[in-house]
Length: 300
Image (tube, rainbow, N blue to C red; front, side, top):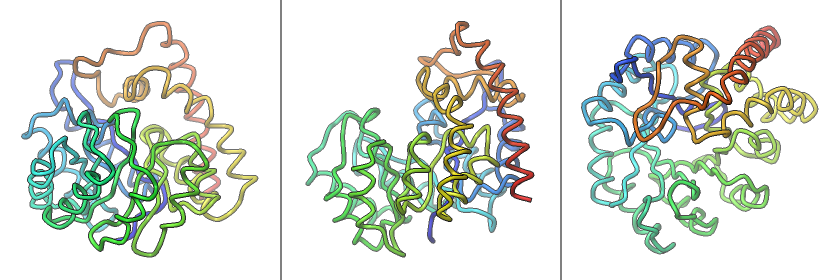
């Protein structure tokens, strides 16, 4: 399996009562497939994985696997702070039909680089699924350095990395390890076009929850080397990218999804979007509908 292009880190819709909103989840999945999204991530950080109980996680993954089977890969977010727990989690999602595991660096415990090497090798050896490494130091307190990623890229069970650091220098260092067996993916919407123009394989995106057609087109343009057209579309999306980080992810995203009738809120300790930003959300919602329509026409 080779990962590339526009990959959506799916939000998890909840009802007004705080339960899983399964019809909304199904609508979100079908919208992604219809827009040409090339893989999906279930229960990553955007999906509020830490707020899900095991039964909810399993239900979301089963539905995603059933909906996407044979069409696009389904990645499951599985990273835990302990190696043995991560291995058990990977085995569980493998039994549920996931195609790969997106495994974040162990949060909170701050392992050394040698600890990361041992952790990810054990997970790849014993977890029963291909592993995509995920480096997001702003959430985990741990930064996996490029030389560590390079050493792990040689493992046959490790098929890629999602790098959420935005610096061009970090992406350039990782591109040295890209191969037919190891994909280098951006995890940062605002700098993803630059990364793909430099040679990255694709993007694991938050924004593509609400603009899946535009993000697929952005990936196609950047991966195809059309720098001018990619820059123009990236500029059109820039306000959305800024808005999605105005409060912790996925708070702004879920405010936009709610305007589409997909979900009604978050789980504590996350709070709804501040009322100070609600007018911007409504204005952006109208603007991104136009961007989606233009991208749909351009792709036709």
